[in-house]
Length: 626
Image (cartoon, rainbow, N blue to C red; front, side, top):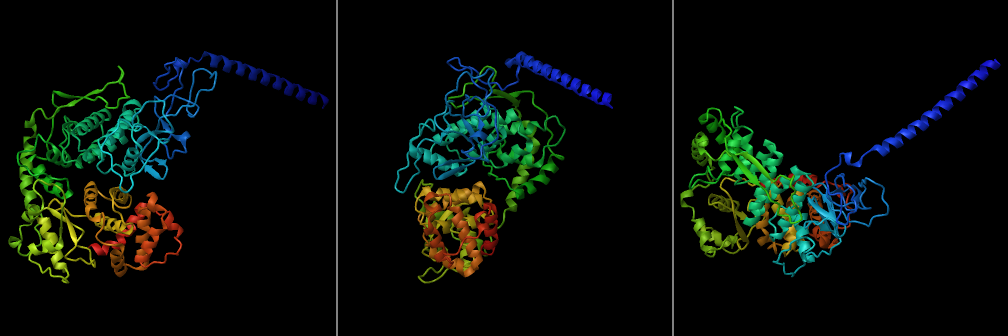
């Protein structure tokens, strides 16, 4: 027994000795391996490693997207930004000898992030920002430490521009940030604002080589709003160049082209390239978009066709029949070269950076499109016959409304035409005497005649139960024949009226954010936003007070439904400093909607999504817009 115990003791001691030896050998090997690693052999992102002073700079790696300025450690940094103590993504090839000075990094905030400055939140700016003067020169960088002044009543809006965000005056920064906060869906007030914003898009795609899909999508969205030819041409060139670089998928490119009335040839070349030499017929939607938007294929005095499912349904069988199932393309021999030079003055392309791309040039020889041109002529005739006839008993006896409009509008003026229901009623030979109310039949006749001549009348004359008077002002807005206004737009237009009346809006700086905010609640198209923008001349100031809307809504909606309307309007104005925390707005709404001002807001209303709130109001007000 004693020998057994001694044997076990010896085994344990020997095992411990060998384990200690193995551990020391492993440590020595790791030290030797670490000394043998060459930092130059590491597969790191290409960036500048040496500063002007010769000090080695840290590499900056991409991090997760930014959600708020407070989460600086989670920001996505520019690939060429210099490193500093602030960055959690530093990587140096040798130990630091001394602490580096604090450096403000160039951070990126995409569509899912927010930038908070004072009392304004800029959601999804798709732009760079920094917390102080940035070490990386970037004219588009939003320095959140710079003063910002938002326009107030009576302020004269500046007509001058600026070369960068830092060079802007505080008021210009306020205008720029307001435009960004509105999701960039309205025409910018000055050329400098979209130009500076595009500088950031260029850096993100050309220097950082990130978010290419996001950037091209946002550039597409901005294209219809640009009225300056020099910027429009540059933007088209950028979109085409980037689309070729990433070879945007067919369905994504087609979805973007559907929204445009004119599509650059380069984008159409990309769209057609996927079907060349494939022996697959050109899809109907692609052929329809091509014929609708290509300037070279348009013939003289040809009517402009907007994209719609109804028009595509008419075109498809004609196209399939005359083109024997669809046009089959062959890839042309010659290519089209597209070169892009960034407008951002802080970007310098190196020798390795290729800024020239090539695509097949399908429009050098238009003979290949002859079968498609023939089918388009047949379609135009069929489309014209399919346009809805106006619902008027005696259309041949209708007044010359177009002549009436041209007569009232000053010669050469393109301003919106404002008149009164009374003046229009006289032309249409209605009884407009004082005290006489408009009948539903008269209102329908006015709307039908206006649509025949290509006009929409604001305010909406088709709201059930709403009182209209002959002295009321009305606005004529151009409307393509056959256009059907969506329920979302009609409800949004009414809510915009009521909101402006409730807060006594009387200037653009209030109206514009309100109009943009409606996109968070309702599914509005670009055309819907243009119509909403046009009604500012009626809503600033509104011709009706909040009592007018309150009386109407109290007669038609239940108490719970009126509460939903109140919560919607409070949510709409919540982001505006002068109204968001103003108890007077709640008091006015409660007074005219006949609600208890002291009633506590239910917790679920405080967390309700904007889209859910919008859907709720659409259901509530659906019966009023039949």
